[in-house]
Image (cartoon, rainbow, N blue to C red; front, side, top):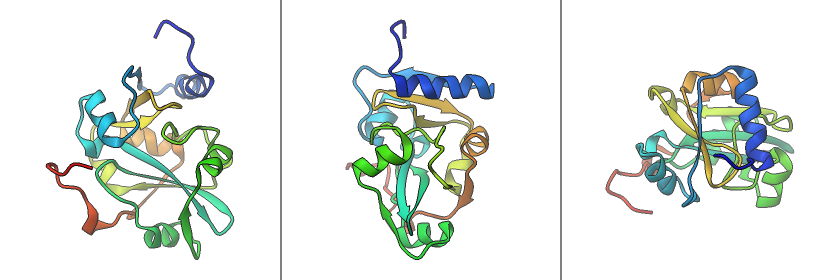
Length: 170
């Protein structure tokens, strides 16, 4: 990455440097618009890709991190976030709440997000890949560092009957 980083990616890179975390930030020329594309680009399993989803929870914002091969369960998200109803944020709400474009949401730094939840299944990996500010950038880091940096609380927030099988295509 010899060229200057986009502002949102630079914000993530600076945050990682200042946190002194061992992380690898990479740019993928093909882009990573889906979890499947991200896993292929990064050369990892789909379960190691972290989908960072923004939810509106009773007038507050919550970020929910789930594996790339799973679907969030809104009822579980609401219960874990302590709200009555959770809904996926619209694109303009994602930008307002995170400062990132949908498809490139990094789990940090997020000053407007009050609650951050991480699906427990992500903690079983040595390395996970998160969005790093654009749909072309990912960062690889240990799940323990992800939890600490994002100030995330482990929770069961996925629908267990909708987990993708390895041979399933989206």
